[in-house]
Length: 127
Image 1 (cartoon, one colour):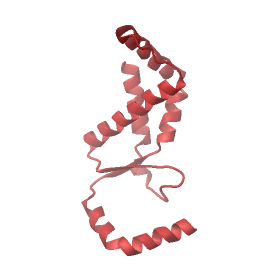
Image 2 (cartoon, helix red, strand yellow):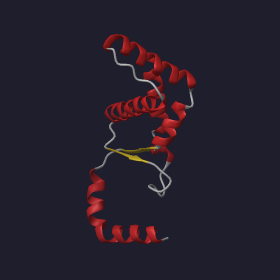
Image 3 (cartoon, one colour):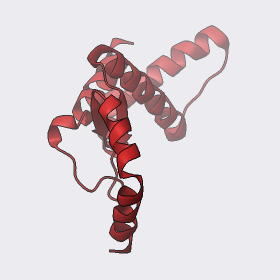
Image 4 (tube, one colour):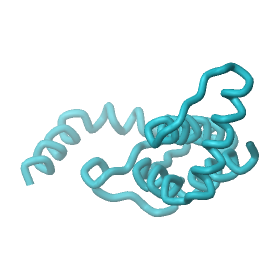
């Protein structure tokens, strides 16, 4: 309740500024990064594919990376690439990360989580 009161106070103080800035925004989206990461890391086939690419890199440069932490870093890198690609292709001007506490309400039409999951999956499979 306290957070809502603070949010309402900020909107009332900065309302005209926020409205002016919002009018410049043309396309907004959001995604749940945690959902993307867990979706990818739950797929053993994708993890195996990532580890295979690590082994290929090791054969080329002599550095072998392995372990869940390295796989997660690679997935996070792919998420960043996916977001930038989707932003450029679809003309987004703002992408917000959705967590349990950051967005009070958002229309599902603005959710790009499944698009990012599909992009990351495809990028890993193409390796």
